[in-house]
Each structure stands twice: as structure tokens, then as C-alpha cells.
Picture 1 (cartoon, rainbow, N blue to C red):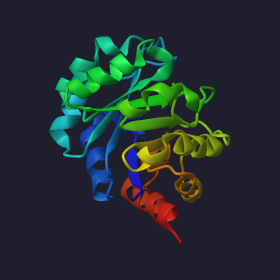
Picture 2: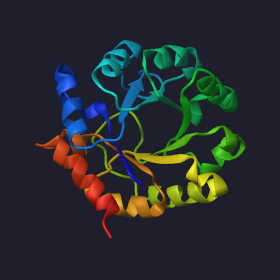
Picture 3: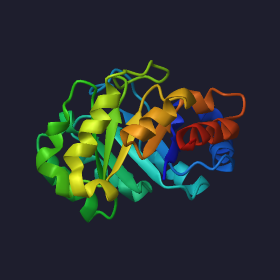
Length: 219
């Protein structure tokens, strides 16, 4: 089953509750929350206070994507704020297994994000500690970027690496995802499609959520 995860990075932050309600009406499965620190990526977004505010407005699962250095310092705050999933970058975690264990011990699901140039084998020794893999199909830091085509092969390689774990571990793809890519990404093995501008930049975000799902599940 394909899950659709609208990325609030592209939402109207002055009307965030309203925008969340619109994607809920379209059948969104979860919300993707991008946290940037201006160091790991060249942008600054939000912190635990905003995550806590979002948690009060929705029952959808929250996947908090930490694009920050030293994520282990802040994971407890994000889980306490309401994160159901916490995704950290392999490139930012020198002790990746320990960080994933920390997330799980706090009661959240643990994920690892890979930048476009980071190979799947960065996951090899944490496969049993993973709940999800987030494949970045753009270089992180800004919304509205174009999808990098080599992502298709990377998703297939990650599914092969996961082997028998494939039913347990979600594979998400984030960056430049639109309806016209949805079917191919699902065929590659992606189980969650993260979309920001393609949803919140549409005149009707609810319809955009449905369009991406319909495209992904078309026969």
C-alpha cells in the first residue's frame, strides 16, 4: 500500500492548521516535517514548539525529518513534542546505530535519510535497527527542486539490500515528487511518497493528494 506524506515545508505557515486540514481531507496518510538548522543544510525552518503545535491539530502520524547536525541532542525534545517517527541523516550521525536505538527507546520509529550522493551500503550495518529509509531525490535544504533521476535505481538497490526486511521497513522518497513520477516510484519499491510543492502549491491540496495516490496505484 502506498502512503502519501505531504511535506509542510511547502505549506502556508501563517495558516498551517488550515493547510493540514485540507490534506487530511484528501486522505493523506502522514505528515512530513522538515527540520533544518542552517548548518547541515543551507536553510533554517522549525523546532519542537511548532511540532507540538502541529500535534494538537492532527491525528496523522508525524515523520520529523532532522536535517541537522548532532541530532541526538534534540531527539528527546521532538519525540516529546509528538513525533511518531524521527528520521536522521546518515551523513550527520557518526554513531548511527546508537542514534537509532535512542529513537526507539524513546518510543518512536527510527529512520535514516540518505542524500543523493550517499550510497545504499551506508545502511548495511544498521538494517536491523531501521523502521524506515528516506531516499532524498533532491539535495536537501529547499523545496521545489527537480527530481534526480538516479533515485529510481537507488530505491531498487535499497529494496534489494533490505531483503526479507522489506515488509517491515518503509522506503520513502522525498524531493520533486509529482503525480507523473508516482507510478514509477511505486514500481521501484517506494512505499511512501513525500510531496511538498506538488501538494501545497496546488489550487486544491486535497485533490493533489488524491491525484498522486491514484497515479501511484494505477494499473
